[in-house]
Length: 267
Image (cartoon, rainbow, N blue to C red; front, top):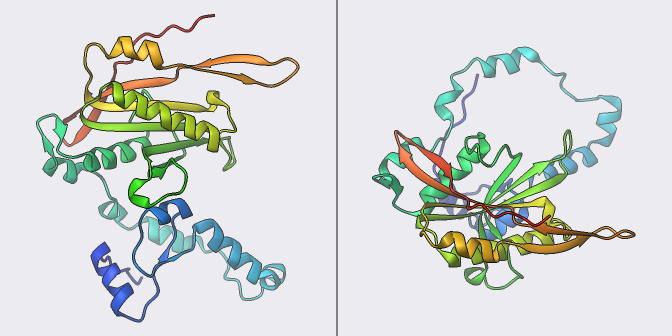
């Protein structure tokens, strides 16, 4: 069985510029717009499948030129030692931490994305799609755009329809009142642009190494949104789904403790 050669991002970028080759970026358009290899063509997975099926309608109808599924090939691939190709943040964290904290937020971001993908942040539950550095502002020069550190989505069962969104703000050191203001701004954006005005579909989280003692008072004061749903009758609702998690590093991985202040909602 022919093996694929693994190349670095730098090698791929150099090939795209200097050699006669085509680089296809399979990520979504928003991720591509944030950053991509020069000259790369953006062709998201879903679009690639759609183009293929549209251009092969006759073959699909007649089954002409279509290779039958072969379980022996799938089994041969599955029998290989694929684990050694898996990317985990363990090695990175060992070189990007000081004591129980990460040295920079990109390391924290990579670890949190990995942990959310593998359902290791138990206080936040399971999520079907996880992305990072998601644009959360009207279009403007990219250096001035607001970006959500981590945005996750949960789908309706057996669909790709998002029904829940998780907005996460990260701080490698201490969070403060301004961090709460920042994540609430992102919550408003996601509610407006993704959730059709339904705050109930949005959850939020701050993950930081520590929090000041007085943050509970500020949390109780500002972490609330009032909104209405439906008509005839209109339902008045209140949102305050922001969790505060304290992270710490040990033995190659992060652990998370829920330190969210008690913020009782009125009945």
